Length: 179
Image (cartoon, rainbow, N blue to C red; front, top):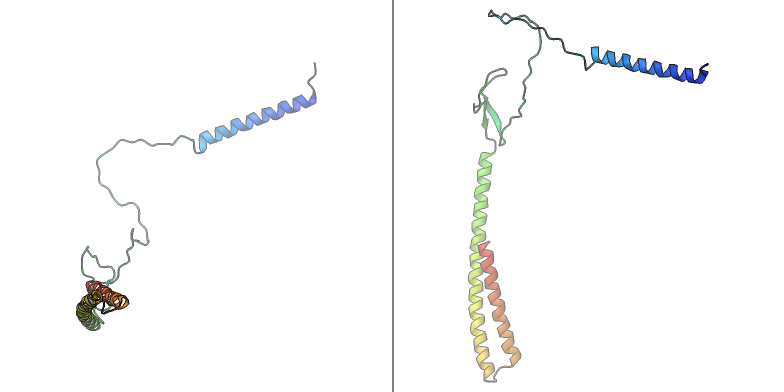
């Protein structure tokens, strides 16, 4: 019995594919990432060590830090040089404050402004209290006259409104002084 040519061709291609897969697996297992690691084993002995590697190169720091002043000013004195060994907390340079006098004068001026604002708020409170007392007295007097029918009800209500307004001005002055 003769095998048809199409079947023999498929059989040949299948055998070739299997051989390629086996060859690839062999290469990966012997020299690829799955290959066994070769280890040299030797007996440990006591002896002296000597440097065996020499070369020229550049040394770089593992970490780099940005340093700088916390206030504006000019550097008046540098206490370390490039390449010096420094320790944590060591003074590296001294700063000459450029505008320290101007800052002190500005702070004194702002204190004076704040003092004058406080004095003005206290004066406003005293004025509001005086107006409130006057409005209360006037409202009480108009109320008595209104009860005797010597004043109109509208005039009495107007004076009571003035008293309420004066009380609100006192409350506003107190709040302004508290701020």
